[in-house]
Length: 357
Image 1 (cartoon, helix red, strand yellow):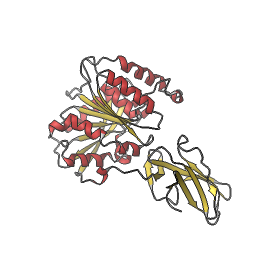
Image 2 (cartoon, rainbow, N blue to C red):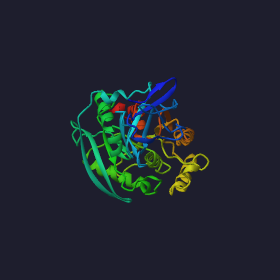
Image 3 (cartoon, rainbow, N blue to C red):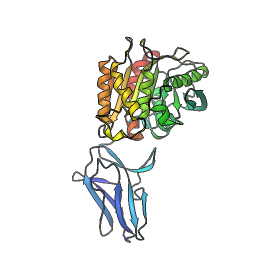
Image 4 (cartoon, one colour):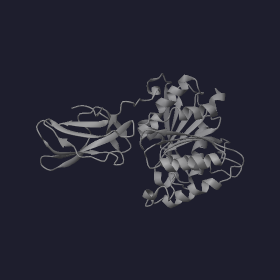
């Protein structure tokens, strides 16, 4: 019994069952990484050995059948490592080369969080303002606008990252607007009213928390798509500004849902697919007015969005935007996005905000 281990280039799972209380055990995880899911019975329980997957960590659960024929999906009882995800907890296998981000245990600043709701063109948007505790509301500071912000904070430790980065002195103290998506598919899947709605939220926050410097917008999956949509939604003169004059200068997109028909046929039944694909195809011809964004992107090397992210990087670079792309040895999940914050987001905000320190 114990955590999954690598033995002779195979990842081996073991489930203790000395009383033979289980009739069957199967691995529930991404089918593209593991072909064989059925455990074999041993004298003391169950075991499964699979070829070492091409990632550094693997989230999974167990599908078990008891002696009465009842089935259930459970965490691995012999593995103490588990992670919270957007779809509940998962057991996780760490391969030998996996390392958690150093910033998770680095010194950090104390922070405050205040939540409000802002009426916009798409409806009421709840938003939490994250701010260093020692930063007065009247002191101007840069602002990071985060789609799916509360989940990023809870599942990807975004607040811990921000505390560590500001404590390091690499950038000035900044604030974060953590946007809560009440109607995520409706708001983030290329809603033509979303860019104006997001800027309304920013302006509302700026009235209570002084802001300066270029805005940085970020998100993952549909949130990564929405972040880029906002930044490219301005006129031919350049990226949009809020009524208060705040301008978007940077975008951080993780596993953005940049769907295209020839790359993403598996998404064709998604209700927003046509709208997204049309917008993505039009990015190549979008005028920039001579003003360019600083865009950093990450994506898991074995997730479905990898190819469409590479295609988007090429399109944005050709249009003259400063672009960077970091492949991640993981899949489409918040821990992967957490592990990909540094150095990509560090470098982006340092380039945009470093001179403000």
